[in-house]
Image (cartoon, rainbow, N blue to C red):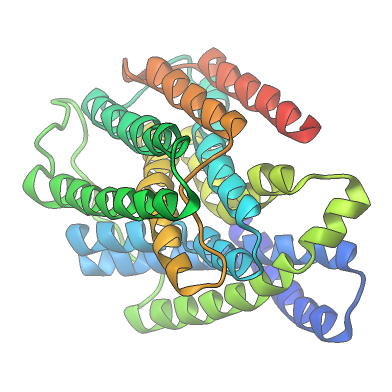
Length: 351
């Protein structure tokens, strides 16, 4: 049912997006069309990547999922950088961290908890991810902020480049650890061994769908970025709010839906992996990659967030760790995460 809705949205959205962009239709109207179109295209990219991952085997498959998991967000951010919207880019990275941990994690725990009184997941994975979350968000984002207080712009950007390289290296090492050297080492005794899955699409079809969907997302994303200024003026939104809430949700909506559906099916381990894994990918791969990409653009992107963004991300990380570290969850814990997201959303709206 969900796939049919996404198919219809893409079928209508892509031609309307092209027509609206060429004929300069109302930017406020087209903003909504672009957002829905990107969400539908992201679902096709996700399904194509999943098919290729199953065909390629666990190690290559894990790498493919890690590479394309946040491709939509990366594409939107690159076009926003080209347009000089560095505040929107940093805000969208913040929004992705908050959205994955609090909104997706919260909805997954809440929806799954309404159907099942208790849901459990691998506690070893939770603890491993906790350490990485603290490193990626608390260490790698806060330390540059502190040191940058006594630096000029050039030194600050140099620090950001060094931090970004370290983050990417550690992220690749974490993938190698999880998918190769320690694959299955920390599996629960009662935990089911991975079931054999059949790919939805053949290799050729999956590659074609992935290529076409990625090209379409790139086109629509560029058009979307040009509507930000008009939409901000029309609704009284700040660039910070657009980045933290709107861009972050649009870039990850298809993935969010998958996590909630998995939790409802009592596959909460998969939901947690999507929420936390996507957060780690944003913090340790997408954010530093954008810093390095900005080297070749007019506007450079230092890895320096505002104080509200930093505090919100740190709070989200520690709240998620405290709730998930026992490998057990329920609907009330999900509601707690959602409450935190709502409070932060109101705060960013009023800034």
